Image 1 (tube, rainbow, N blue to C red):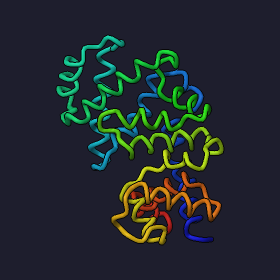
Image 2: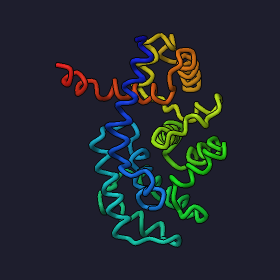
Image 3: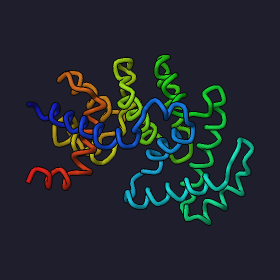
Image 4: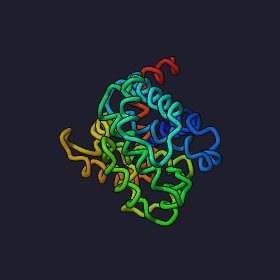
Length: 234
């Protein structure tokens, strides 16, 4: 088995072990806007820091939202203070939560459900629109927007709907993916820019008939979970 194909297999492991735990029932999450929001936060809070910190801040934010019983006319200043008091002490996180809620409450035609909105637009061939909208939310950016889209597309098996030039919207580039691309010779320089890395990964995966999304997830799995995977093989 070639190495790119082997990494893809770890992507399948990511799908089975992580994504299917996050969404036990992929149909019901489209009917519950809050469960959809929780899934989005499980991506948007994880931005280059220790997972334990991200999890703590996310749970504190969810606790605050559950206590606040918000509607679309929520007071931003009051919610910001409540988030801070409950332990969301990173201002970037609080601003991200506030802007995400603004966006969620704008999705009235989708029942304020971010996953339902995403699925509908991906099926309509508008994944670029979703990516660009999420990219504009404070502290989301390219990597987290692509992470969320990659996982939604994987969970709901929508990769077959993507056009070749749309795969870049599902390619989050973090240190693990970059290192895998470098070690496998997909890129030659550590300092390559994000768009170059995305294009190189997608081309290599297409050439080897490998899913670019599963390769991406697998590269993260191999890097971030290497110790756990090694112990399993002992």
